[in-house]
Amino acid sequence: FAGDLADIEERDQLHSLQNTLLSELLRRKDDYVNNKHDGKRMIPDRLCSKKVLIVLDDIDHKDHLEYLAGDIGWFGNGSRVVVTTRDKHLIGKNDAIYEVTALPDHESIQLFYQHAFRKEDPDERFKELSLEVVNYAKGLPLALKVWGSLLHNLGLTEWKSAIEHMKINSNSE
Image 1 (cartoon, one colour):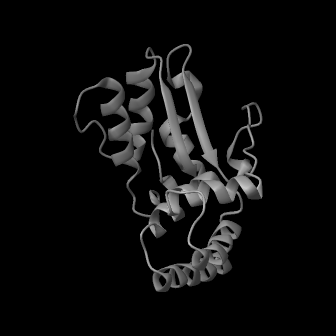
Image 2 (tube, rainbow, N blue to C red):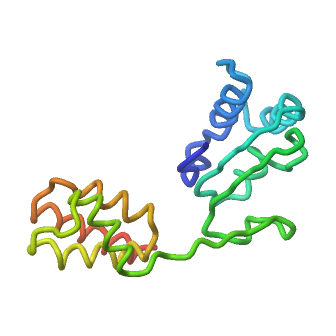
């Protein structure tokens, strides 16, 4: 599983991720790759006979796919590469696409309460703020879980501050 790939390219760390991928799948810790181009040659060379499941989370650059899992032929028969992205253009025409639907409002609220309060009915002071957070999450389960966990055990002031940050960040995207 390779998560949080959105900022890998900016930090020029793609070869580091290729090393991690090879180390995990070959079950040997080693510095296999010195740069992303070496890695692009080495991954299919070393993994072409291995049946693997690779999950690449939050892909937002074509390079991530090209240098980490350029082609299913890089891996052994029966291998699968699962990619999550917000940009459908990064996925090939022949690849199967599964669109995740957002949770309905009532399920979003339940999931958020579960992570933020560890109970179904929070203190009345937090209900309106909770609805704001749920609104920003747009029914995305991961966002609801992460924000709920981050806000867990925080006071009203911290909640309001966090929501202000959400407003600012959602306006900049």
